[in-house]
Length: 119
Image (cartoon, rainbow, N blue to C red; front, side, top):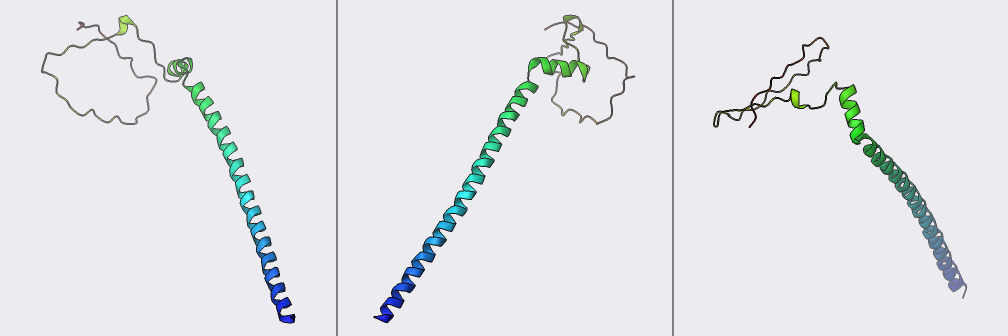
C-alpha cells in the first residue's frame, strides 16, 4: 500500500508539472500573439500614411508645380510645337545614346523650335 501511494504521488506531481508547463507555453504564445497584433496595427498605420502621401504627391497640381519650379519646364503651346516629317522608309531603328550625367548649367543657350509641316 505504501508503494502504491508513492507511485500515485509521483504521477500526480508529474501531471501537475505538465499542467504548469502547458500554462507557461500558453502564456508565451499569447505574448507573441499580442506583439504580432501590435506590429500589424503599426504596419497598417504606416501603410495608410504611405497611401496618403502617395495620393498627395501624385496630384496634378503638385506635379505641375514641381515641373515648373524645380525642373523649369513650360507648358506646350501651339506656337512652340515642332513637327517633323520623314520620307517613307527613310527612318531606321537605332539604339538611342545613353545620356551622360553631366550637370545642367544655367548659361546653356535655349533651344529654338521651328514650325514645320504637319502630317
